[in-house]
Length: 220
Ligand code: FES
Image (cartoon, rainbow, N blue to C red):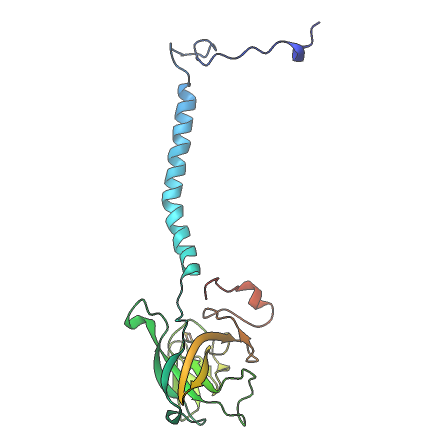
């Protein structure tokens, strides 16, 4: 008996009539079942993309937003500041959105007898963005604390968490002095020991294993 695998291969006709498919008609090359199956799959794919792609864009878009002004900004002469209390200044963190791109920054002179951080900044410039969900905190000089009005977050004089839900100290900005004027630069984040990190969003932990669950965005 001849080996079937050795039989010469006959090319199958493209016409459904020649292939003996029930209900075929002359000139047809694609069965109606295949046509409707393919059409249904294509329609399903288009519908899924119509819902899925915008959602993906909303989810991934913020990863690539640039939201920090890269340059140092003048916040006043050195004589405006002292080591005992903070002075509120306004800087621009996003130059492309007008007024909403401005923020309050609390600035004071570094105090080597009181400050324990090793950040080597001549001035302490603290962000008013709460590290719980981002509400604006306010410095209360009577208690030497930063207070968040939203959920009761409290921060110490140097920005460390004193109570409430915030997960890490308040962010800071780089500072430098040029010709007697104080300049405030890019933002950076801090862990609970006031060690410097790449800037993170509010609610992102920077201590222990939690920091690996909240990786930084590529453009922050
Ligand atoms: S946003 Fe500040 S405590 Fe919740």
